Length: 80
Image (cartoon, rainbow, N blue to C red; front, side):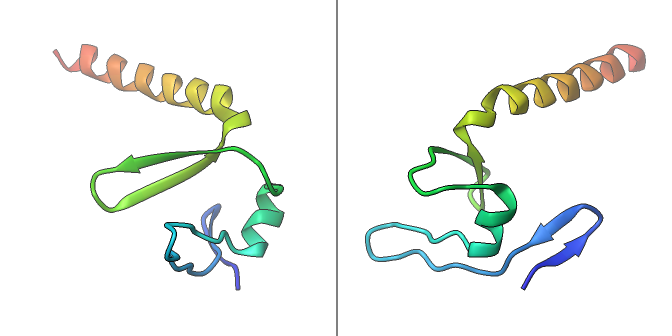
């Protein structure tokens, strides 16, 4: 059950198990090419949002965030 909206995908729901484990839906694992034993980084945004990212993609994610931060800094400079 994959729902798509403007490049974003919703793969369904999961339930936190007794031992604090989360099962990532099969369709999401296939689409993201996540294999068993893959290391995932877990980030929190506020008190309600968790983000999982492959540890192997950390460099790409940092580069993306750096580019976005530069854009924000430029906007702030121009607004002064």
